[in-house]
Image 1 (cartoon, rainbow, N blue to C red):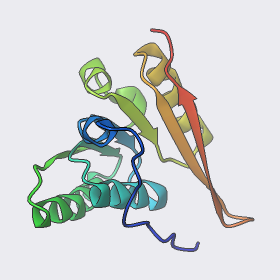
Image 2 (cartoon, rainbow, N blue to C red; image 1 turned 180 degrees about the vertical axis):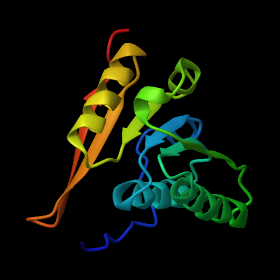
Image 3 (spheres, rainbow, N blue to C red; image 1 turned 60 degrees about the horizontal axis):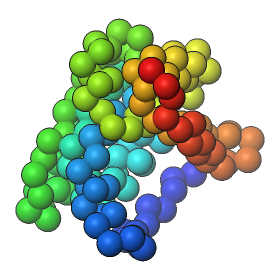
Length: 147
């Protein structure tokens, strides 16, 4: 698997959009290759309010530790947390506490479970997966669902 180069800056076209973006509460399901790359990018951009979920919590904690270190270096707050578990095991409060859900898992059943929970709680969902044959990342915005 190739490592992706993470851009260091992002252009924001709309006044106030960057502030709204940084106030977003994220729920990231998966802390593997895609989830950790996304977390790295979000930390670079200054996102500081997220929950990272992964079955082996040690992997989620490592992603969170690196994210917090980047935020502290920039003097930003660090409201980043790690939770051990699977999407279907998370409480409603975890889902409702997020403005956007990012699904970064490669297992179709888990992606389906995440999509069903996002739909249940009316949260916009962004999914990503890695295609081993082409070496490319695919990212899909599912959009907000009616509760």
